[in-house]
Image 1 (cartoon, rainbow, N blue to C red):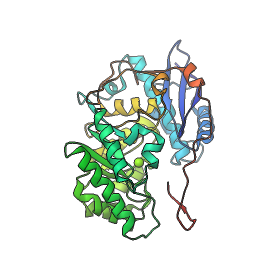
Image 2: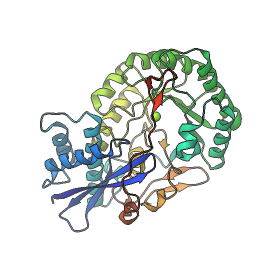
Image 3: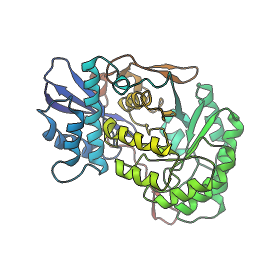
Length: 392
Ligand SMILES: [Mg+2]
């Protein structure tokens, strides 16, 4: 069997362009789906997939590790840059989809699963709606509480919020008090049985991240995410050591050695590798083994499109350390029109039972995708009050 071509299908979904990757084979009807969404870098990804196709078209798609090694190593530059690692991921996910289809089993069964009966989903406040999740001002604690109640009313037992504002490298008490007020309001609104997460989007410096982490520590968050830049390993380690709240990070790391360095300093308790950015299942399974050695939990980053979600679930049904799946259900109203999924979500509990369909268990409706061609993503640019550029 040979790979005969690799196509990308771009689907504009407001804040992101979902980049679906389709790997075609010479076996009639056999192809695989992957996803290589990288917001604000869509054109680069489409080009990177084209470059990688030169290496793998004509090769046997079932030699997934061999093809991964070629894509990572060949032509001098390693695949660690996020554009290339994302493109590799898109192709790698599609190759595993093909292998599952060839053997007639879901991907998790290729890797010794299922290791659990169900997976819990968590949502973003507002279900991933751009304005609710990213643009609710942190001086509006009441709105955080209202959105938290909504998430629980929709069946979720866990949700994530953006309750930490962008700050300059050092600021005083005001933003810290505002973040604390939001977390307090959400806890008050939903009680102790619901798990609350806060994502800092790596906005703070290590000093500010420490202040925010300590301020919200008494509210028993499920995890506190990216409290400083991923490059600040010693900052992550210091914050993780200083609070009881588990620190989560890893969505911007693209390869095994970066996770090795993070875990070596104990920079987190929860690894948020992104299957669509860190080289796909092939590299993620190595990172997961490293997590196990450090007793670090897995909660993959997954705010992208539906192939990414199917991949996260297949991974979760095969990984003992996987604790929860990030999910987006309200980013665009037609999300479910572009995909047919093999797994089942219980709407009352927002838990997922595994797919029995082969591979990733999904089919993409290409006609629906074509209704949403590429558009420039909605800009999300941060400037501090003095005009200096900040992190979104
Ligand atoms: Mg995040």
